Image (spheres, rainbow, N blue to C red):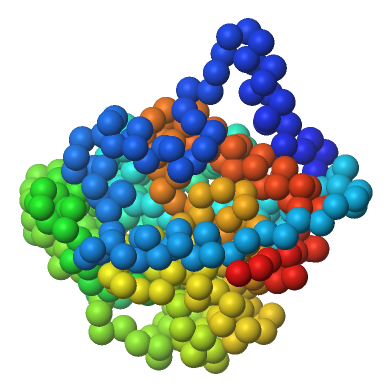
Length: 388
């Protein structure tokens, strides 16, 4: 059903508030958020979010990929009403956008993931919660209310902890499991290394572990009594580099909903995901944070879409900064996109209100750009609208 109130109306709201002398607290151009966040945050937290692996060539490749494709608008088409909604893996989306998993949000704002969840609920956009959350998955679910939520899993070495996290996520109403595959080891990240900054060492971003009964059962003393030992226990199990395709059967046996694999860039891996019964993939290079010199996510998207051939959901993240970016990804075959750094910077700059502003700005930009390209709905988008 077409949206009752177009997302584009956020533009009118801004102009009308301007009549009273009010201007947006933070920019509407999401590309301008990063330098402002650099001024607001301490070097460690800012570098942790903004930085990438090695020379950060992959971070640049993500934006270069979007810039190479150009939209070819059509004219004289009725676009008075636009249809942006979509259903992905049983999750109703008012627009094909989800808040991607960003861990350790407490380093950006004291309310961390709770502020993000409240903003997501206010605007009506689903949130994907990171395992590496600063707040427990139960508390974030409560803040989300009826808003759809997905849970992102960093696969621990101890299966008892994995089972406990899956059970907790299911009980808290997370509908889709998103398994990150590209972070089985932390990459060489010079920004973090030069500052010797890793927030987990300060007990940031490990609330789901510290609150987990299976994790706590492996400690000689409680995290409250010996926080240092709890951190070391977490670091020892954070991710398992020995996992392989055959291990996905374990997740399927213990998760009743859809499972999506995040970090797929090669079409053969997409085909393998389907062969082992996965429900979707996220074409992602982790925002350039894991492999230096890797292919941009958007560059990898068409081949993955062709390999999947409509048999599973295909999502994309890494580098999305505008409504035009979302349209390009959808035109190349993505079912939806996930955003990360933009809303993280919104959180750093203005808390819950900053996240809500970022989401509304992106939605309005998407709505307007779709109309100006001559499309009355996202279902009309295909590669014919692109040149590059």
